[in-house]
Each structure stands twice: as C-alpha cells, then as structure tokens.
Image (cartoon, rainbow, N blue to C red):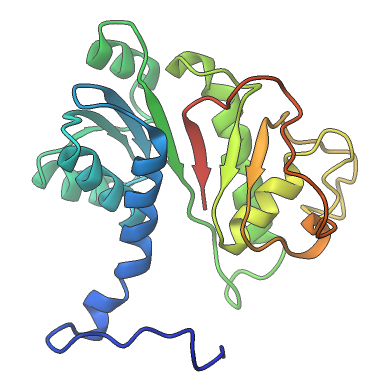
Length: 225
C-alpha cells in the first residue's frame, strides 16, 4: 500500500505487463546516464534481466556500441543474443578474457552489476540478503579483472537489496544482518552509498553529510539491486 499521490496512471494502450517493465527499464537507463560513458566507449553489464536489458538499450541510444552482457542463464543469454547483444557465460567462459577482447585489453569504461535475489515467501530471510551479499562480493572480487578499482565501489538504488548491500559493505562493523550464524563476516570496502530512502540500520541522522570515506570520485562501477 502507498499514498494515493504516489501511483502513476498508465496511459491508454499500455497494459499491465508493459507497465510492470517501466520501473526496471528506467533503473537501467538511469544507471547508464549516471555512468558518464561517452559515445564510442565500452561497458559490461552483469545480468540480463529487465534492468540489464534496459541498460543495454540505453547504452546503444547513447552511441555506446561496445557492450558485453554477462549472464549465467542460457535462456537469458539466448534472448540477449537475439536482440543483437554480445553475451558471455561467466560460469563456463573466461569473463576477463572476453572483456579484454572487447576493449583491446584496456578494460571497460563502466560496469553495471544488476543483482537478482530470491524472494519471500518461497525464499524467506536470510536468502535475499545472502544473494545481495554474494553480488557485492562478486563485484569486489572481479573488479580488477574488469579494469576497475575494488576499493572505490558505489552501491546505488532504492530497493531493499541496496539497503542490504550497503549495510553489508561496511568493514567494520561485521555484516551481522546477513546471517545470524556468521556474525564475523565483513563486506568489501565501499567508496560511498547513494541512497534516497535510507532504512533500518542504514538510516543516518537527517543533518549528517554524505559519506565519501575515500578521496576522489568513485569508479564507474555500480551495484544495482
């Protein structure tokens, strides 16, 4: 439920199935706009769900044709390939080699990681948190292979996964919210958090200034949830 002023009425001719895609596609387009990649640049999209599809379309609209889509699902890879995308299986193929081939060894200009997580009630807590945590660890572990700095990550978004990832990205304190059975686990270091709606333990005082613990801007590598 939400306030009556929040919903947007779908125009005539737009059915509910198409309307359901507005939010994820808009997330992908917004991420591309924030990436700053110029026409002729290059990018890697990790994840070929609705957000990833929207991001690839937005990159192409900006004149960024060298876009590689990494996706472990064969069905999603086939769909992206049918749309003309360059795809790679990060499980069965060498992702770093594919990025090097795309960019001549220079690394991509931006990496967008679009993370799916299992949903309740079929998958109750801590499964969603574990999936967000795994996505955060993957991003940090593979950053250097992709030409990015793992110490300059930015977690961005409005969804619950962002809050979980931001909470787990602190080191210290331990990420005890991920799994009560592993209270000593820590997430990777994080350059900053871009959150419009802080929730739970991530909430900060209203007069607090934005956190940027490391000097300089963050790398063009975002974890989208």
